[in-house]
Length: 283
Image (cartoon, rainbow, N blue to C red):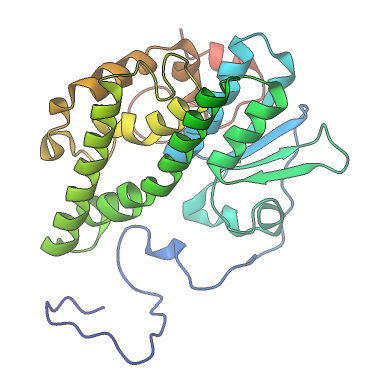
C-alpha cells in the first residue's frame, strides 16, 4: 500500500488483500457467502442478528422502545454477529442480508419469514408493523422519513469517512481528515439549526428519526465515537447537546445500547433473549 502523497491510481485497480487499517480484513470487492452456516433461531418471532455499532443500536433501541410502550409482540432474540470473525459472510446471514452488513432482522411472524436489512428500513418496517414511533399526520410523517433518510445518507461520511481516516486508517492523511471533518461539522450544524426550533427531529414527537440520528450523531456529539469530542468541538452545538442528552436518558435507550455490546466501557450483553437479560445489568 503506497503512502506517497503523489500516489497515482493504476490504470486498472487490483485488490490488495493486505491493504492496511484496523478493519482491512473485513473488506473485499465481491459479495456473497464465504462459508456455510445457518443462523440460530430463538423463541420469539423477531430475530435480530447484530452488533452494537451505531447501526445496530438503532434496532435494539427501537425494539426496547416498543416493549416499553407495552407492545409485547416486539419481544425479540438478539444474536451477536462477530464481524471481525466474518460471521456476516455466513450463508445464513447473506440470505438475510445480501449486503453482509449488520443489522439484519428476520420476522418469523409471517409465512414465509420476512428478512429485513438496512437499519433505516428495519426501523420503518417495525414502525409500520406496530403502528408506533412514526407520526400519523401527513407533515409529521413526511418530516420523520425525510430525517430518517437524511441520516442514512449522511452516516457513511461520519463512519467510513471521518471515523475511518481520523481513527482507523493506518496513517494520518491531512486531506481526507480535513475533508471529512468539515463534513462532520457541517452535519452537526445542520442538526443544531434544526433542533433550535424543534424538540425532536420531526417536531414535538419522538420518532424513529430520533432513534436513527441519535445512534450516529447523538453518540458523536456526546463523545462516544472515535475519541473525537475535543477535535470536533462538539460542545459548541448546544441544541444537539440538549437533544442528545435528553434522548440518552430514556430508559429504553439505556436498555437498547447494551444489547450485542462486547467492547468499551459500560454494561455488556453479548446476546439478548428476554427482558430479564437486560434487567440483570441495567438498573
